[in-house]
Length: 95
Image (cartoon, rainbow, N blue to C red; front, side, top):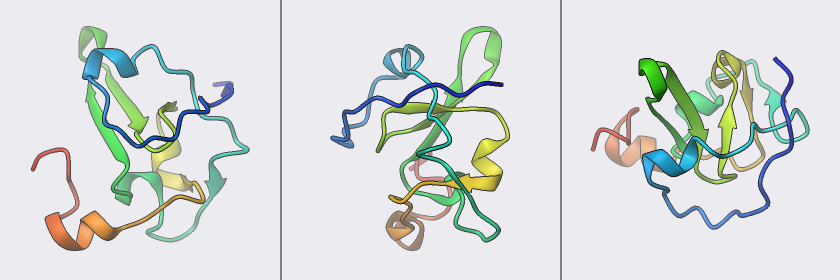
């Protein structure tokens, strides 16, 4: 799957679930390979929800962009942080 450019807005403001489906995919200039637990899925900016036809939509709230399926397991960006992991657990969207 080709990844396109990310949005420039980095406000970190959580978006409504319907809004994020219109975001573009993060490119490989933003998402870098990672061989540790520091991947998108463990970052507090990572969110997911059921999109059309219940297909998961993976997002980065920091970059306001979509993450391609599988990339959340092997990549991260410079903004990775686990601050929320220590405070609220591994699934902050549940809390």
